[in-house]
Image (cartoon, rainbow, N blue to C red; front, side, top):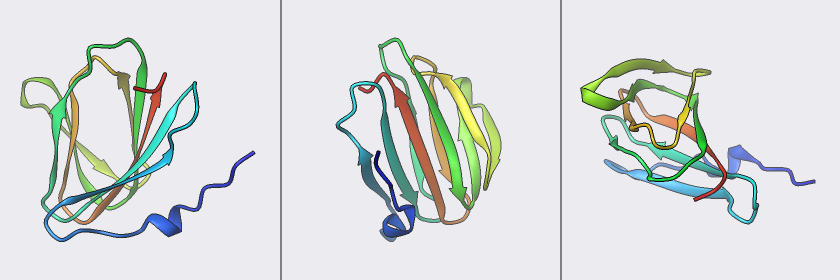
Length: 106
């Protein structure tokens, strides 16, 4: 059993994205916390792999980004679930904390 303290990853880099690997040793999944400063974009990308991912908004507001310029409002408590091959990204309107889970890990 492992306890993760998200309160210890509540740091931002002005004008940028900060990444915290919370779990990177599991064979089954990976959890990563990204903190995006206001106005920062986590660019749309995809991975040429089979698997699933979720992006959970821990704090803040912005948009989930997808294929062909699609934007879906994202706020605290919202979770995007998709295949890892599907284009995905995030743009922060306010300071935004997201938790990404990838299974199996890449």
